[in-house]
Length: 262
Image (cartoon, rainbow, N blue to C red; front, side):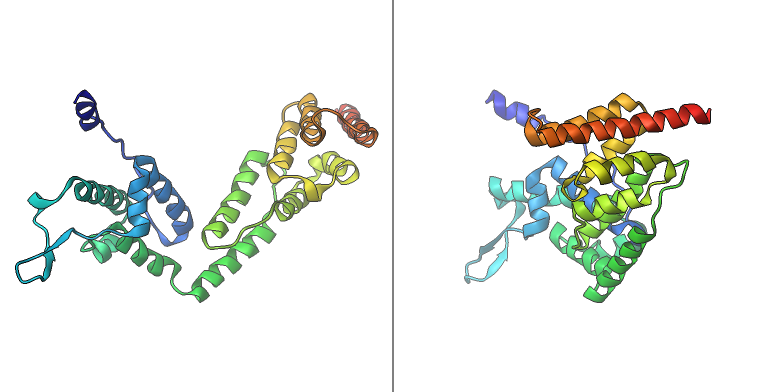
C-alpha cells in the first residue's frame, strides 16, 4: 500500500524542448525523441505504435468509444503515455505548425504528419542529403578555431545525415578531419600518416589526439599510447614500439621548431 502511495506522488520533470523549424528538423527529431524517452520509454512507444481511445461493444454489438469511467488501469496508463508524448511534441511547435496537428488524438499521428511535412518525399530527403554532403566536403577548420568547435560543426552535419538515413563511417570521418586541419597540426598529421593506420582509427580517437595538442605534449603521447594499449593491452610489439619512437621524435621536432620560432 505504501509503495502505491509513493508511486502516486512521483513527479515527472518535462524538459523544455527546442522549437521546431525547417532548418533544424533533424536535430529537433533526435532531441524530441530523447526528451520523450527520458520521461518514460512507454511514452515513446506510444509514438511508435500509436494509441486509440479504448472501445467496447454496445447492445447492438457495434463498436463504440468507452466511457472514461469504464477505462481499466492499463487503458488509463496507455492514455497517459500518449498524453506525455503529445505534450512534449506540442510544446515544441510554433503556432503555424501547431494548428496543423492540434486536432490529432495520438502522438503517432502528429509525428507522422510532421515527418511528411519536413522530410516530405524521397526527392526532398535526397536533396537535403546532397546539401549535407556538400557542407561536409567544403568544411575546413580555421587557423584560430578550436578542435572542439570544428568537431562540433562536423558532427552536426553527420548526425543530421544519420536522421535522414545516411551514416558516415569512421574511416571517412577520420580522413575528412585530418584533411581539414590547419598547418599547425602538420607534425601530428604526419605522425598518424607515418606510424598509424588511419583506416583503423576511430574518429573519436583522432579528435582526442588533436585536442591534446592544444593542451600538453605529454597528453599527446598518452593519447597515442592509449591507442596502442587498446590494441595489445600494453603488450606492444617491436613494430609498435618503433612507431611510438617515431611519434615521439616528430613531437620533439615540433617542440624544437616552436622554441626556435620564439
